[in-house]
Image (tube, rainbow, N blue to C red; front, side):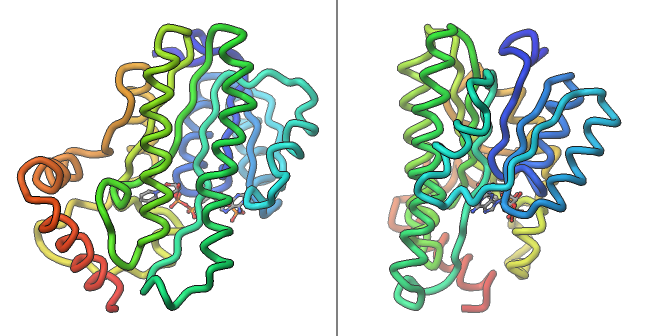
Length: 265
Ligand SMILES: NC(=O)c1ccc[n+]([C@@H]2O[C@H](COP(=O)([O-])OP(=O)(O)OC[C@H]3O[C@@H](n4cnc5c(N)ncnc54)[C@H](OP(=O)(O)O)[C@@H]3O)[C@@H](O)[C@H]2O)c1
């Protein structure tokens, strides 16, 4: 699918400087789309922007912004000054691993703001413009952790469930209006964020850790075809057992036990 032909000239990636966000940016640049890249740290953003501009002869705007700030979307709207966004990927997220009670309510509020409220505000602003234009695309990055209760990832998993349900609902509402929405439910993916958590391999049957490029590539293949999808065959098989074969209680236990082992809790 030619994304530029189908959706338009400019893609915005929120959480773009590394990992899956950078993979999305690189694929979209290779399609010839201009980019708006957002993250907090300026240096990796600048580096990626220059690399993509030189390699693909596209225009890249980069914005250093903390997307967990309450007025983040207003700030970005102001900087863009009416610039049309044809494709939006909301990728940034905060994840805290460990017993629920060991972390502060403040950090959970920040997580809710970044993982739920900011994407919601972004969808409202840019989704409305896409609907008026009659074309556009939105990708919400979510996680297999959000497919059931996930002990030791409780608040993160709940925010990811929110994103999946939101994307699926809007896929239905907007499917005849030219605006495609998809939730990308990733399993373990080899990104700086994932590696920093120093996970331990939990067993022979654990699905393989995917590369960010595979995730982004698969997502654009599924965009416009379905409301949500799970990345990678191994993850889909695991999820089939967890969601369709095993009783809910067993699935929740497996998820909690796996996280406990993975993070030596
Ligand atoms: N990696 C996995 O195994 C995995 C599995 C399931 C789902 N996911 C989902 O996939 C997405 C990407 O994960 P990832 O592993 O690629 O993450 P990552 O390596 O931690 O990268 C996240 C990107 O978002 C930016 N970011 C983080 N917090 C931000 C904030 N407050 N404001 C603005 N930008 C921010 C980071 O740049 P700065 O630090 O410079 O801001 C970075 O560019 C997330 O939604 C995650 O939940 C990942």
